[in-house]
Image 1 (tube, rainbow, N blue to C red):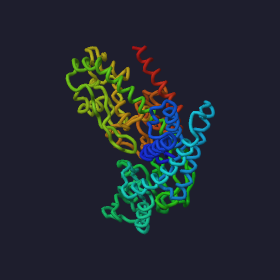
Image 2 (image 1 turned 120 degrees about the horizontal axis):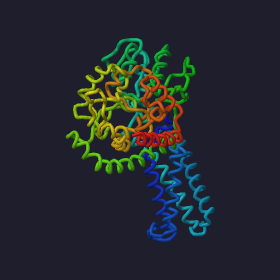
Image 3 (image 1 turned 180 degrees about the vertical axis):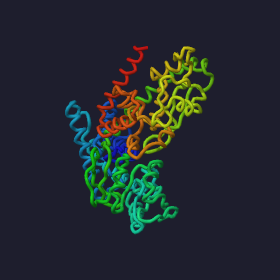
Image 4 (image 1 turned 60 degrees about the vertical axis):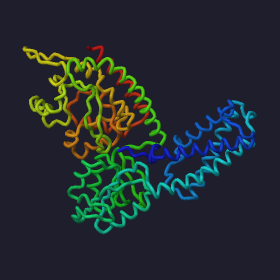
Length: 478
């Protein structure tokens, strides 16, 4: 799975908002100290510098990871970090004013007062908000599963709960030296033992695993191959291919963390920003397509225009994926029948070019398969457009791995799970690699692992551009 070097910009959005609020309170206060009770935003020059301060502050907070591990920092560390951030903010804005020769426009009293007040505000606000979060964790916490022994289980649970600063929720644990299934340790249920822990983790929604048990190398090797973020106590460890290794603290335990890939806070922010922008544009295009496509779908097959199907997303989280309906309403109930008739029963992915469930398609008396409006929609990938709504919701990304259906997911072996360690995407590497019609699922998994371990914003951009090219080639071939 992707191991974000920080907890991710979305997990710190509250700190970002509070920091920007402190910045603008300091801005208004400093202006009033120098110029009296007036609205500084009504003045063009001060409105401009307010925008520069805001953008600079965001740049430092998000792309330079100034909020990295913010919940783990004590007073001394927070004081130093906030002071450095304030100085960097002042230097960056000063350099801007020097570059555009606008320094004489603003009073030095205003400038120095604002910087000082900003520091004096944001430090106690950060410290106070951390106290609130630790007492009342309201953020979207990662799901952490524990693998322990009967002797250290209680100590590990207490350590994680007391030292994780509200970043994790623990739905269960596995005790590897005794069968304690059905029991609870400090309120955490024992959900598995050594024999069935892999099967449990294949099916349940888990983001990360802490292995705090000896003689479990074969077990955690399997978990690493599944694409989970795996934290292991530093004992008897070795390097695994494709895996990023990071030494860190988790709930008071020093661990060596394995992950299939890693991203910085800035990279995660940039990818999500691109997803949101792309999702907005895609939803607009979906609305326009609806006006054109909906009548054709309804005339040939009365029923709903959109089709919602349960898919499996990141780390096993189920969600509803939306499409323009290109098949008859009974398509799902006929899937098993068609698969058996075509000899595709048991396949990891169901792909059948001459699918009779597609709207308007039919088999002629001579055995020729004639395409219909549903084939046209699918060949041009028009049915995929409603998934931009899933992108906006955060269930999917523009680029990722194909989200499997529930029945496909239930057939996965342990190493197949790695492909679902990131948000699934509307398009992906294997779709544009020239091998989108492959039937070997292992090849799909290999391409997905290649994408995850080698991810970059540039790779996403190339895949998006290639996707457009693939769609146009399909249109030209029709």
